[in-house]
Amino acid sequence: MTQDTVPQGLGSGRSADRPAVEIEDVYKSFGRVDVLQGVSMAVREGEVACLIGPSGSGKSTLLRCVNHLEKIDAGRICVHGHLVGYHERNGRLHEMHDRDVAKQRRTIGMVFQRFNLFPHKTALENIIEAPMQVLGKSRDAALAEAREHLEKVGLSDKAGNYPSQLSGGQQQRVAIARALAMQPSLMLFDEPTSALDPELVGDVLAVMRALADSGMTMIVVTHEMGFARDVGDTVAFMDGGVIVEHGDARQVISDPQHERTQAFLAKVR
Ligand code: ADP
Ligand code: MG
Image (cartoon, rainbow, N blue to C red; front, side):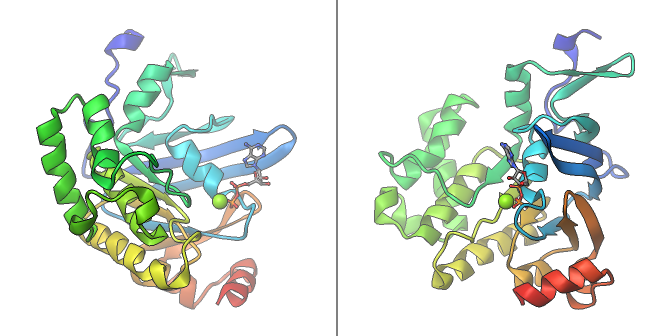
């Protein structure tokens, strides 16, 4: 098979007995800083996997490796059965062309701590941008879908507002709607409520909870232990570039087995 005939989309490799995300023995360094030191983790279809751990433990880097915003030094990551960012030929991994990486990334939604909406576009215009530019949807089709997504995040009445006319929580919900407009099969959240005033956190978490209930596969880096315990299926505790403890969400949060997890949870609770 030549590089051009390898299926690039992430939706075609689904199978009931394969996890949605497979992270196998991943290593990543920045210069001399070893950030990920052999991370393995699988996420089932429809699972909400929460990643917790102290600042600098590698959570964001791991998330960014899953959609190849960062290259990995060793190991492999598959989403829906497809290697992320690399082709395998004769047992060796070769990095994909940028355009193929971009194609893969379309099916993985990412929501950051900072919402990064276009300031000169309304909520609705922010949401239709990528479906029109990247998926080639007509303006009318993109608008109709965007309105549905705005409704899902509880912001039907804010379609014409510019980001500066929205609270941080509302902007984050627009950012979630914008990600959903690309019809992702996996959603990655990197501390989506960390930049928000406390009274705005609940609305964003409610949207994420509804998304989880709809069956979306999600990996969520969060400091919201209540959310991790109640909405998460699994929790992985990272420290120093490794997963120290990983298991049932309630069990890890309520009855952590590892000393480092216990110490971390004692501090954040
Ligand atoms: P977390 O999200 O758990 O706080 P990060 O994944 O952001 O942790 O960072 C883990 C470590 O990697 C930190 O020491 C951080 O300084 C370092 N790091 C992250 N990104 C870069 C980068 N682009 N260049 C150099 N060092 C980085
Ligand atoms: Mg981080």
